Length: 278
Ligand code: NAD
Image (cartoon, rainbow, N blue to C red; front, side, top):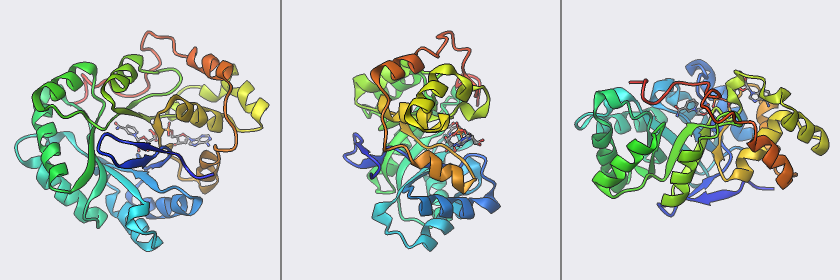
């Protein structure tokens, strides 16, 4: 079965399952992305700060896959938010990727202590209007940041890419997205391997029932919740495993059991806090 798509507020479709390349070393990115494309992925999530845009670009060019069958996301790093810097940054990312446009461009963190995230969002709008990004969105934005950029520009981000996995479900932000017609992209969808997610009974029991792996159950949970997701692995067998999630679905009861894994006190977060990273 082919990967389902979600129509963003730009009118463009995004494949709901993709491949993320955070912490894929630059020298390995080309090989990893080539393997992911071979496994069937058409949506790649990178960022300027990952230092591997060249490798992503090389793999997509060598694959021969038509550009319009690919969905490529990259992100603006925090030190490029001020003044006209976002426009220079997108030009540099496109150069490294060897592309004329990206499908989705995101501001990576609000970095509120720097005080430039509203400017960055205004420049993202101009970047979109110039045709350099088909859709624009944000990452790691809290409700206060989202409300502020919408108030200042009237433009709703197509997505908010946030840490989201069963122990940290970010319900305030998923509700904001639903209310504004935005979408959630889950980063760290497998909890980055930082807690024993696969050992949770709700996950391991569903895996046994469906004859799938715990990782496949968690990816399926993200898809069933309507999130866009791009698990990362440099191991081709895991890329294939993570893509093989379209021949089963979880029951409402199984989804509810996984929903109940969030302690709801924020203690499930494994990554940085958006108010602290600048
Ligand atoms: P993830 O939850 O996808 O975890 C990746 C780790 O899970 C891998 O290193 C591997 O050890 C393990 N894994 C993967 N597949 C597995 C399988 N089938 N079985 C067992 N273990 C498996 O975490 P991530 O890479 O941080 O998140 C995914 C993507 O999200 C990133 O690659 C990146 O594109 C994006 N991301 C964005 C931000 C942001 O600030 N916007 C931050 C982190 C990640």
